[in-house]
Length: 441
Image 1: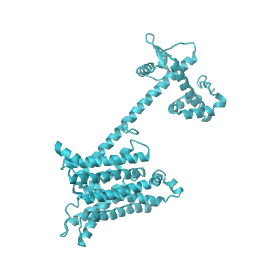
Image 2 (image 1 turned 90 degrees about the vertical axis):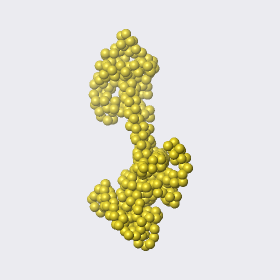
Image 3 (image 1 turned 120 degrees about the vertical axis):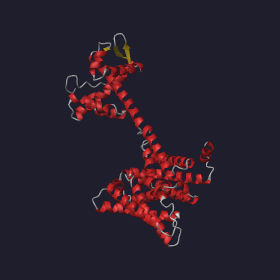
Image 4 (image 1 turned 90 degrees about the horizontal axis):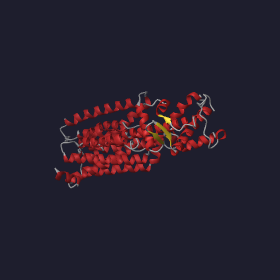
C-alpha cells in the first residue's frame, strides 16, 4: 500500500501524471471563473449548461458516425456539447426576456428538458448498428481515468485561455459583478462583457465534462469559490484562494481515485473540494463559523469591560468622596448576573483596571483604570449628546441607542463628534450626564 501511495504521489505512472495534471489545471480555472459567476449570481448557470450539453454530445456522435468519422473523438464531442450548451443558455435568456418566468424556473425548465433530450438520444445511440458508443455515458458521471495526453493538453489550453481572459478583463468583470448599472453608465459594453463571461463559463464547463461529468461539474465552479468567500472580502485574493482550492481538490481527488481504482474520480474530486469547503466554513478567517463565534465572544467581553468601567466611573462621579464601590451596589446598576459580574471583575482586576478588597467585596479604579473609564464615558456621552441634539432622541431613551453603536466607534468618528460639538462642549470637558436630571444638559 505504501509503495503504491508513493508511486501515485511521485507521479511515476504516465497515466497518473496525465490525469492529475489535467484535473488540477481544470480545478484551477474553474475556481477562478467560479468566483465571477458566484458574485454575478449566476452560479447555477453552469449546472444548466452542463445538462444542456448532453444532447450535443449524443448528437455529435450521431452526426460524426453518419459521416464516417470517429464518433468518440473528444474534440468532436466537446464541439457538439458547446453548441448544445450555448443553445441552452440562449433558451434561458429567451424565457427570461419574453415571459414573466423567473430565472430559477427557467434554469429548471431548460436543465430538465435538455437532459431528458440527451438521455433519449443516448438511448438511440446505444441501439445503433454502426459506431462504438461504449463509454459515451461516462460524460454524465465523468471518467477521468480514460483521459489521454491529448485530452489533458486540450483542457490545459482551454483553461489557460479562460484564465487569461479573466485576468485581462478583471476590472471590467469586477464592475459587472458588483454594479452592472454603474458599469453601463460609465460606458462599458455590459451585454458584451456578460456574453464573454458566459462564454468562459461554457468553455470551463465543457472541458470539465470528462473529468467530473455533467452532474458534478457545477461543484468545481461553485465549491472552491464559495469556500474562498470565507477567507477574504477582496476579489483578487478570493480568486487566488479559489483557484488553489480547486486545484488542490482536483489533485487530491484524482490521487485518491488512482490509489483506490474502484472509487470514481469525479466523485472523489467533488468530495475533496467539499472537505475544503467544510474547513473554510469552520475556520475561514473572515467568515468562518468558529472564527465568528470567537470574535463575538471577544466583542461581548469588550462590551462588558467597557460597561463595568463606565459604571464605576459614574458612581465615583456622583459621589467624589467615596473610595470604593460595594459589590451589591454595583450588581444593582445593570442586569448582570452574579456569575457574569464576578467574571468581569476578576478579568478587570487581572488586567490592572481595578483594585479589589476581597474581605469587604469592594472595588475601586486604579489610575490606569480611571483614565480608561473617563475616555469610555466621554465617548458614550458624546454620542448621547449627538443623538439628543441632531437625531431628536429623548434623553430617557438615548442611553440604549448610544449603547447599540458606541462600541464600534472608530477614533476618527469620535474626532468628528468632538469637532461637531466643539462649540458647545470644548475639547477636554467631560459632557454632562443627560440622565442626571432627566433632561439634556
